Every structure is written in structure tokens, then in C-alpha cells.
Amino acid sequence: MGEDLKSRRTVFAGVGAGGLTLALAACGGSDTTTASPESGAPAESGADASSAPEAAGGLTTTAEIPVGGGKIFTEQKVVVVQPAEGRFKAFGINCTHQGCPVDKVENGAIVCPCHGSMFKIEDGSVSQGPATEPLAEQQITVEGDQISLA
Ligand code: FES
Image (tube, rainbow, N blue to C red; front, side, top):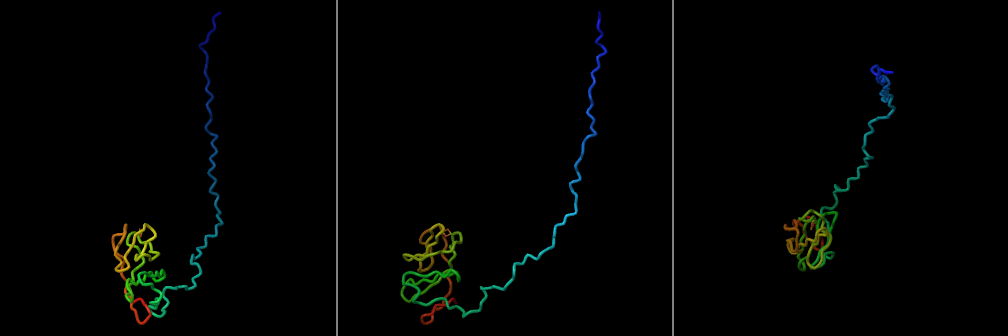
């Protein structure tokens, strides 16, 4: 009995490629976004404090500035010092290292809190780095006991 196996047919069941349901209908679009361009201006109430034409200068009084020390005026960005009695000077408070505002005057030096630079009250020069440049001197006038920014 000879079985004829030649007629074996391998039938590949072709998977029909017709079943791809492309779900491209996602952009169903009646967007009801209220895209009203609200002018993002937050209530302008004209609070411009920096341009108040107050009495020009009146910064402090001589009594406020200790001999051999000084006082920092952050609003005016100036430090006023009195290196010797009756001799007043002023410097900008921004450290020449990386611009931090100096925050105290002690032991004859104006001190930056960021990296510890110190500046002499006599002339603003560096007494301790990392800063290498002196503080910028500011002009002041002293009349009687009033110290004003020039
Ligand atoms: Fe003042 Fe660095 S910014 S020491």
C-alpha cells in the first residue's frame, strides 16, 4: 500500500489585512476652549515706589554711622562708613566678586555674605578675597549732621 503523500498541500491561512480599524477619528474637533486673549496685565495700580521725588538725598545722619564702622542702606544700595571721626564715605553695596549685596560692617571692613569678601571702610579696597576689585565709591554730601547722596 503506497500512500501518496505528494499531494500534501500546505495551506497558509492568509491573514486578511483588511481588519485594520484606523482610529483616526480622534481629532473630533469642536474645541470649546475659551481662547480669549486675556491681557495678562495684573492690575496695574501704579505702585512705582522708586521714582518718588522725595527730598533728594536725605539718607541718614552722622550720628547713625559709628566711627570705625558703617551702616548699610539696602534700599539706596549704599553703605555709609566713617573710617575716622568726622570723615564719611559711601560705597555701592554690590560686591565686586559676583554681585551679592554686602550685609554688614565689622572690624573696619564691609563684609559680603556670599563668599566672604571684605572691603576696607577707608577706601573700599579689598582686604580679603575672593573679590579683587574695590567697591564702587558713591558720592555723598555731609551738611551739619545730615548725610545725603550727592
Ligand atoms: Fe561677594 Fe562672592 S559675591 S564674595
